[in-house]
Amino acid sequence: MSYLTQLKTFVEVYRSGNITRAASRLHMSQPAVTSHIQAMEAIVGKELFVRKARGVEPTPIADDLALQVAGHIDVLEQKVASIRSRASTDHGTLHLAGPAEYLSVVAGPALANLLQADKVNLVMHIGNKTSTYSLLEDDVVELAITASEPSDAQYEYLKLDRERLVLVMNRVQGKLLGEREITAHMLNQYKVVTYDEQLPLIRRYFSEVFNAPCESPVAAVCPDIRAISTIIKAGIGYSVLPDYLCKESIAKGELIPLGPLGPENDIYLVWKKGALRNPRVDFAKDVIMAFANLNYLSALPD
Image 1 (cartoon, one colour):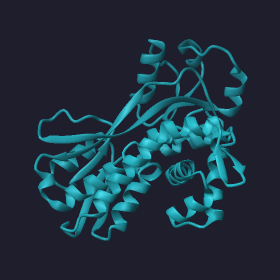
Image 2 (cartoon, rainbow, N blue to C red):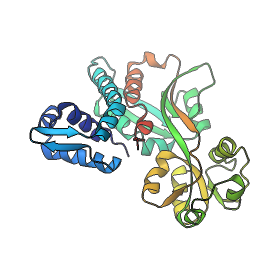
Image 3 (tube, one colour):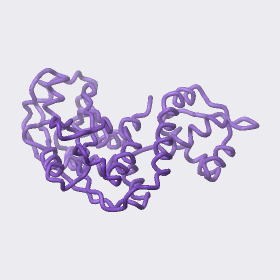
Image 4 (cartoon, rainbow, N blue to C red):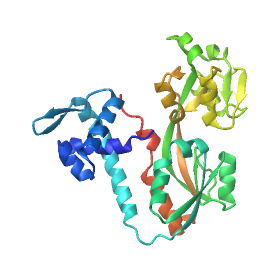
């Protein structure tokens, strides 16, 4: 889940020092602003403001949070304002390819703003790395989101986001391991659930964290990564997932994170050279990039 709206409200209250004044600037009701602040306090687990006779006073936690997020919020605001000021964008249909899990869990705000501009209709094509680049190559899609940096010179790209790989296990077996040091040898005694028989995410985690191969018996191969956490929550083995697919289940205690945090993957927005000469594609690229790092920025400070 993204907390950009609540973060924007927090920054405005922090800067104005007054909930009523912040509500006026944001064109929101005072109870709505208060609700956003309470939501942020629930997220960080600490009080952010102390009420005074003439406004609110930030706590040290609020000072730290503002220092880390205010600049990012400003950049997003500036980019969105720049996009909205354009008046020469062609109307039409845009075809976008990408992985189902990122498009469905993370990219919602960017795609919603693209559609709210009321200039672009969107057709999404779901697929893996191979099918995504094939769609670009065949000019079926104009833009693509992928965790694979393009190596062909015919493509241009920008870094859109980052994801962290997390090792997770079902609640029963994960709790039994307790505080024990997690090793490759230990994990190889348990079943693994993967989206590909080559164990791509799992193999990378084992290699970079343990410097060892994964030799766990494969319990299931599930091409849709979103379903892997469901299988594990049902009591079957472990897997390695992008953080945005498991952090909510971890917070609820439905999945148990184990071992060190895994490596990060960059996520890219890719297009063919020359595609941006089409104003519609260029416009869509700017809207999507205005919401870059949605997943990375949602990892709030402790």
